[in-house]
Length: 177
Image (cartoon, rainbow, N blue to C red):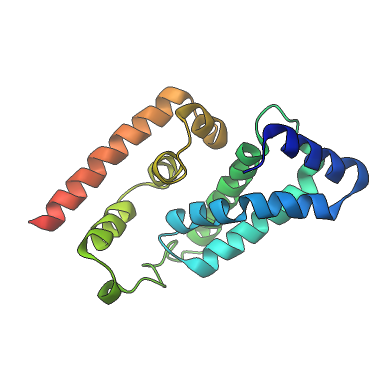
């Protein structure tokens, strides 16, 4: 992970000198965590996650001059990514298509029962609850940073997290019956 100072230096090189190598270092630093974020939001759809990550990095590159530096670069990038995900869902919904497939790369025969339970439980969450759970538990981000990424008040993030935990517990307990 890059330090805040390294991020600012790389962004400055991108803005001032159109240094693609500097942007490449930012991509390297964030590509795995951003892709994992999308994998959780899309319920394991690797192709969609890759497409969303690529769209996010393209949008970040073309918009890098609008990065103000008031938050970490990763926070700004995740916000762009979440907007891309929401836009994708909206386009699919308007087209009358199913928005998230039932885990295309998911093979229940090779998974443990717990993984199946968690996948089913995650599917039961709303997009915002799934995003909060992903950022809090999988990416280990603090509430304040999640609030910055999702443009929600901190108390709303806490409420989503609380509701998501209840839904997850209910879904997992129901499956065990």
